[in-house]
Image (tube, rainbow, N blue to C red):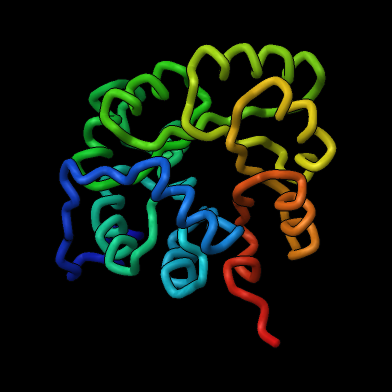
Amino acid sequence: MLLGLFANITITYIGNCNMTKQEFLRLAHRFPVAAALKSSDDIQTALDSDAQLLFMLKGDAFQLAPFVGQTHRRGKGIVVHVDLVSGIGKDRAGIQYLHQIGVDAIITSRSQLVSAGHAEGLVTIQRLLLVDDSALETGVRTIARAAPDIIEVLPGIIFPEVASTLQQLLHGPFIAGGFIRNATEVARIQAAGAILSSSSTSALWYRPTS
């Protein structure tokens, strides 16, 4: 359990000192892959890696605060997928809790949580799941109304094929997430205009060694 892992760590609370969108983009510029964390086994690897942004995709609310402190002490940013992490209210109160413990950004598919994130001063990332042309049309309309700070395109591996269409329809910036497993794919996604790839493949969290 994450809670046990960090039980003896002093927690640093960030309070109302929010990460700005510009600061998020600066971290994304430093390293092109965000560490997508799906289990407690990923935590120390991600903290020690070159990844500057850590995406928490699993876990629960009680485990978050210690992890936030650890992440900030490494100079990294912590992003929480509100829809997937358990124990967080899917409402304004839940977003307020994340703000209070120092989370830098949220990921969600829900427009009302994007609005709540804006109200709390958090960087907001809204997911756009592209399963077919109809999903593209509906998703673009939804995201245009919600106006998140950043859009995450899933599955990210197809981003180079849809990038020109998305860039005509939405302002971006774009993150690509899902099925990204090697450096060649990361480079293709970056060349197509994405600011970041999100991957659970830990080998991609490190700069290649010469």
